Length: 111
Figure 1 (cartoon, rainbow, N blue to C red):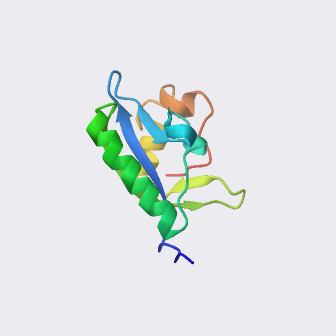
Figure 2: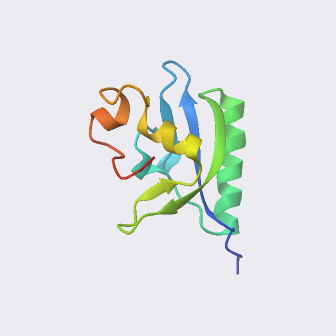
Figure 3: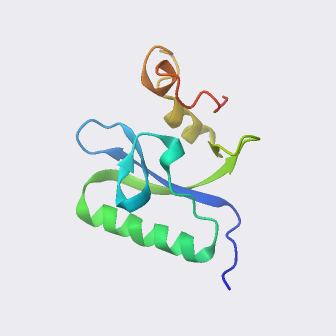
């Protein structure tokens, strides 16, 4: 039986062509939706996420894939643990009319 990692983990990167923040999702796809991110909660899942990161780096499909700790809010939605990732999930901090917050996405990620 696998041990649970200290924190739940997701993988985030930037899309190669437009620089948009994307999250590693089911089927090896990259999604701009934080809610679509695969969440690793066991050592085996964390290992699979690490292997996917290595494959993403080798393929060059995205830029700087990183594995990041996350939590969940009371509704069970993914909430990034670090301030930097909260900003990346929301979009520009000085222009609330741009990025995911302008579309009403990720409004549960408080700064």
